[in-house]
Length: 443
Length: 174
Image 1 (spheres, each protein chain N blue to C red):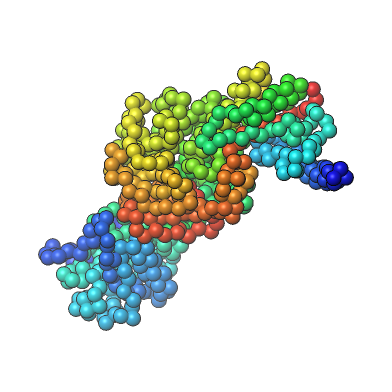
Image 2 (cartoon, helix red, strand yellow):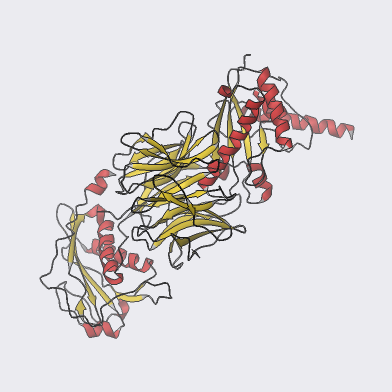
């Protein structure tokens, strides 16, 4: 795992061109992502030029994946190559803007791929604003290994997405999840990690014990999760690179679950159950200093830090039913933020800090929703028999979650949805899967 | 009618005996499996292991499982009655210890159901302790919604899944 990630060294900042980006863009290519209906932006992506004789297949694959990433957002529409008037014969050749305008391409993405004898792949790309007839940003090149070609493609797509939307990117990211097999009464569960699009799956545990709800550290290098390997639920922290793990220091005879890292990557907030009562605690993973944050006879669970680390949103049934509350990260008075009908759970603070994603259960249906941090502007994004456990994309535009079908043969799968509620899509997994946690953008 | 009842009893007894190897004694470790109990749909015909000091007797005749209302962890009359039987059995068989599993149905988030299962197992433990069973013999465990015994997604299954199960372990030589 470590080697896989570490081996891919990107010269991301090695800009290619001598051509400065155009500063005279009258109507710059820009897709404003609003909550209104969006007409997908049409783009042309001619298959990247292969600049070495052995790069043809790689050029096909990388071009295809860049296009898949962009299309998968629901924000872009790919113009089929059959419609092209111009062909891109060489990476440096001048762009015939009228030919691309004629087929209504707003963005043109060109690229070139070369593969060296020692298995290094170099991908160059440029993004053009067809209507203003200028390049949008500078050409870039990425260098990686042949087996890391998907990451290179995601990096290219990330650049294109970020330049056109003005938002942060999210394609070069990973998801840790629970892979599930076997009957509902005796489900076998194991931790898996994969690219955000379901590729490159690796398993991090076997399925000899139930594992639940993995959560990435802020740097994406460690994962907190709950395992029953002692027979009782207990939190572990796993080093993704080394695939080594250790148990968090909790009192004997207690049960612990629902962990999440603070933005400092050192403090863990979690639920600890003693005497049947579940409260929130923090643990400093270096010193093992434990602090109790709540002391009520109610259930307090599913805590999540604000990005600035100063507040924690969590779920409590102190009012009689599960609702969402925010309190200072050091504990203290909590204010309720959920006010609608139904039961609320698993709140997760958005990366930008402006929204809380949550699970809502109302009148026999489950929803994933978002609300502002003061509880206002609640919007439900999904509805099904059982949706739960949202996790944010690194840029805060997309939410992934678990959707479980009903009945004796029901099984969970991972889905993603735009925070506008559009573009609901199933994430490709090898087996049934649950409890996704989205990593930060990889470096 | 009389013969019919007798043969039904015989068949039920045979089928129970057939599965008793796996069900009655298999979960002696207490941790690996969730106690399903063998006391099932046998049409009200009482069938039980003969040895009152056996785990099988405890699971079937005393009853190792009690049920809860939606979202509740309070014991109802039927639950208390079963637990009274568990108290008597545990008093008579002091070499046994128990893990009390708390479970929830699938309506609810994973985290909340873990906490709810913990409440249920603790409610059982507290009752047993209040009736004189040493707390050191009883450990609580929650499975939340991870180990349903009934897989359907209707109340008939949910009602069976909202449960606390007392899983015995120990040598049994008292």
